[in-house]
Length: 504
Image (cartoon, rainbow, N blue to C red; front, side):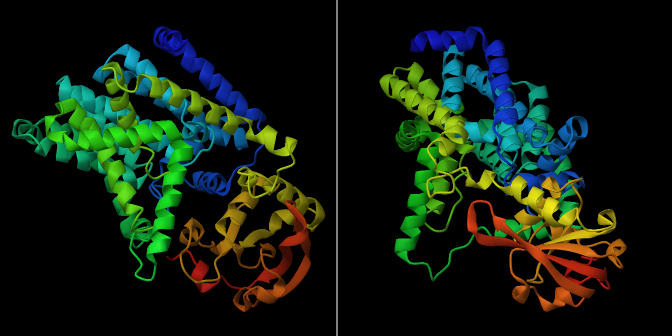
């Protein structure tokens, strides 16, 4: 059965990929899950295309803008690029592994990728991870062609795809860095720095320059935000550090699947010990994945690390695993790993049906809670208050609280209005503070949605309106006994708060 499955993937790869894409696209349409906060936030970015944004490079916003520009601003269309990129990712996973090993190993990698639960999420959620993973794998393919097939054109395309990966997420800067390490490992490869490597560096630099210029004009805000993710706190106890590392490992077991994760760790340990005896292509694959995986596992002992940060490092590890499988290793273990992974992936797809079927909504074991209630909240606000106000089109909408409230209201309120965010800390905490409020809002009245009651609404916000009055409340759909959103009307905005001005 296993051999037959490998043969089907190998012989009918294109129809298999088309079938997978159609199933995923269908799931986007029928799942009934709202956009999560990051998705609506990036969608709001896409309405103002730029060279960079507060926390991330621009690729995710560009892709959403391209698809919604054609298909409209609907949740399924916002997520469609993820399904497209995921299909391209699988295709290049096959091509890359085939270039390193054999078509049979390539088919195995496709099955392994499909059996990893992260692959379900990254083909459904349109976040920065979808383009990052796709362009990362494409870069591995072209670098393989450039380094080991001596294909000069491939150096340029490796640079283009690496640049696209960097425009997706900052972690992709590790790719050129690890490539430099690989070239320095062998004196015979050093002449490449004077020739072909320049073909790689040129498109990478062309992608970096506009991002750097944008940041220079905005006080290097993206780099400051990224830097804040790193750093060891002296007040954190050893117990806390171990708990953080344990949580990170738990995420790996869930996102990669338990058996495959353990196999990759064992393989990485063995190959690291004998690194100098590895072939050149194995050393390349080790540097582009497993070595980085060791680094982030060690980092998790020092500080909190997000579970998805490590995912690109598994790609070359899985390719190495397929090469070892060809040599006779892990034969039974990989079959079990694929079976367990597929069960976890299918369960992930079934969650939108299973959770309500067993009345598990909004419980501690409901992983879909982030996808629910935003559309309901916006519709309730619109029907009960927002649309009932006279001259709605002449009013502005302001949200207080986390940026997610701002972006979700922008997507789900009727007409998808521009929603301005009020940050009471006075700091730049999101892209909304980078944009600020335009001068055109002065003199207008505002419909205000807050996560706090009137007593906790900042006086600085109240004072900029001629009058400020409560309109009502909206209960949390996930808990009818809890008031989550407070609605206010601010008449005639007299001035823009200093921390919201567009001069920054």
